[in-house]
Amino acid sequence: MKAFSIAFAALFLFFGTTALAQQENLDPKWLEINKQMVEAFGEENLAKAKEYGEKAIEYLKKNNMTETRETATTLNNIGMVYYYSQDLPRAASLMVQALALRRKLLGPDDPEVGATCRNLAEIYKSQAAIFLKEAERIQKLHEEDDANK
Image 1 (tube, rainbow, N blue to C red):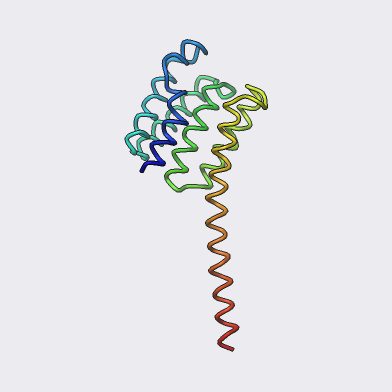
Image 2 (image 1 turned 90 degrees about the horizontal axis):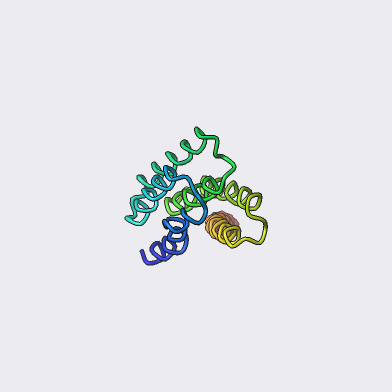
């Protein structure tokens, strides 16, 4: 799972560091939950990563932190967990939310916005490949039907 490890390093390492927490004054309880999600993801325990991601979302909602950088990061991270779980519709939904919030909080040209755009593009690419295969399968069925007539 080399691609998995590379994606993990690129997408999560920056957001999981203590230095980021000190620089940005991020919520310490959220940081702990996010750290657990990142660790589970790094261990390829996607079910546990989803659990921690949902826990982070609930924590942020409960503490009226839905319009924060923590929420945007959580949505991005859990979106990637769903992507690797092959739940592409859920991954896309979460990533769209992360993108909208990051644009609102950080501006359109922030590197975190760019990272989320790239993540969303990967999700859409995967969805497009699935639909393309389905279209080709259906087309082939009809071509065979026409040939048999």
